[in-house]
Amino acid sequence: IPEYAFIGRSNVGKSSLINMLTDRKSLAKTSGRPGKTQLINHFIINDSWYLVDLPGYGYARVSKTSKKKFQKFITNYFEQRKQLVSAFVLVDIRHKPQPIDLEFMQYLGESGIPFGIIFTKADKLKPQAIDRQVENYCNVLLKTWEELPPYFITSSSKKIGQEAVLSFIEDTNTEINALQ
Ligand code: GDP
Image (tube, rainbow, N blue to C red; front, side, top):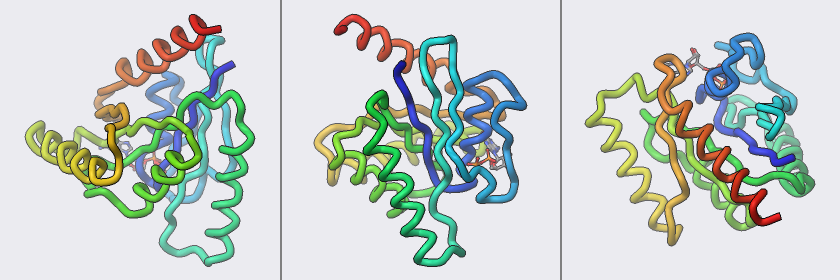
């Protein structure tokens, strides 16, 4: 069954987003403490697809060796998952594009892995500021990409964007089934 992987910098709001998408508050535990989600978690949604929770990256205070280890772990995952349909890279909507996220998207692109961008914590900005941030992000992406990836504006605390992300996935699954 198709898999969709969720990944992003630690503290980006991944656990909260997964809780929102799965509607089960206790499923993926949120942590104020970065680095708590270490392993890969799978959640089956509607008996029809897997939501894959990948560990957060970009801890400021880890050694070079554990950074390397982490990269290997992640690249192993992406190389082995035949069922992976798309990754979602989470970015905090308040931050300007971060090199680590852009590099990760570059890696996905070079590996032929489709991805979307999920902007998190939209409740922290006013609508105008959201537009500005998203526009800026898109402009930066267009410097290296010919096309923009699908993107979603979300807030887990205000339940924004749940429907958009879920219907994107359901629609993609429908397309895949039609092709089979
Ligand atoms: P993770 O480390 O990426 O899994 O991030 P968490 O889901 O644990 O969230 C990190 C912090 O950001 C926590 O303090 C959350 O309460 C907060 N947070 C997560 N999502 C949102 C959101 O949509 N809005 C706001 N205001 N805070 C959020």
